[in-house]
Length: 119
Image 1: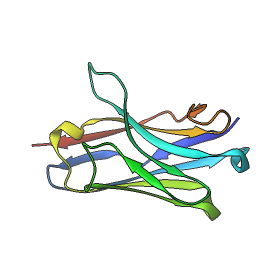
Image 2: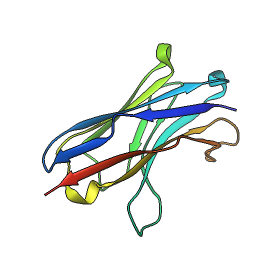
Image 3: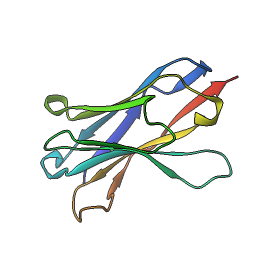
Image 4: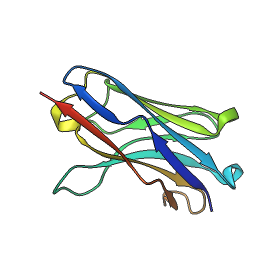
């Protein structure tokens, strides 16, 4: 089982930036894809971005494309989410997830980190 720990959330004004980190441990050699999801109050969890561990290829939700950048440091088993030009609607709990088994199925999840964007 891969363990994931997020950090980097906080309070920022609209237009500001934050960088989230997600450190993975335990069985990291099995990671196929790592992704970021978010859940705003009263809403369902939604996909934000993902990165393929082997080649670094990335994919983004339309709502964050051009503003967020996902990256990874394989040596540190860490994935990052650089968030720029933040909007109040980006306010949510952000979760890191890892796909380590069936492709397309996220098997491991972090505890989440709160991001609040004030207007």
